[in-house]
Image (cartoon, rainbow, N blue to C red; front, side, top):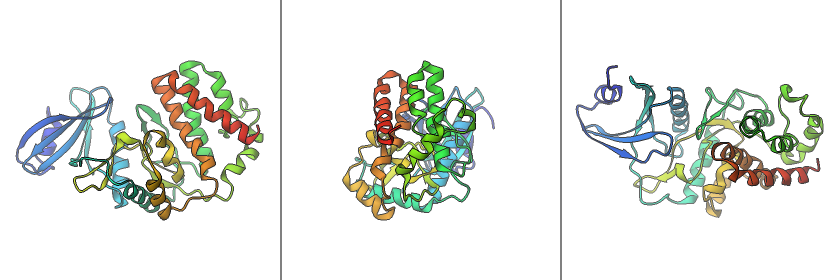
Length: 311
């Protein structure tokens, strides 16, 4: 590739003969985003001048995995590469958004169809690590969901909090809620008590690895011109389907969404008791990304579980 690999790809593999316009579109706070208009249609391009290709590679693999389920609409990724001046880019399908976020009941059904179709035999995790916001998200394949969630979700966020804030109080309280890997056993004096006390939360629950968007909040949900839901900017991995609702506190999901979802993926016993366990991951991530404003919300969830589990 030469000085402009984006332009070169569009004019070769993108099947365009000319680029008729480039304009900036909303791309969030991490990346720059542009719409490239051509005689072969439009392309959506995100660039980041300060990071390598791994973040966009993770996004592309997630989009591909969701696209292959033929359920909820996602933009199809075409190309990930490095910029000659440093940084990276991703080229994907451009979707013209509609005026609203669309029908919540349709989104609920389509999301459930994605979870149902996206079953994985390898276990819990993903082929690559990716990011949740700008935080690394570790996706090492693990056969047991509670271990995966404890080590690579809550555990990883707690380590970040301890490094960033030296917040031993929040760390010590959360370690009572879930069992971590063997490296933490010396710290987790009460680990064995925890295993016994966790059982009521997952009693009679079948946990299968299902493809998750991973970061489903209102900013990553839209609709196309026909009103069909579109989901964007994933942090994909294979996990317990209920973990998809961890960002529900800023997604605006209502009754029609959940009713439609559970028609396809039936609600399992104890769903309400487990819901905040998945919210906690995202509160901890916001705590690490944005500061102490999220600390009290995380602590409130932790305290509630400690009372519930009587540990």
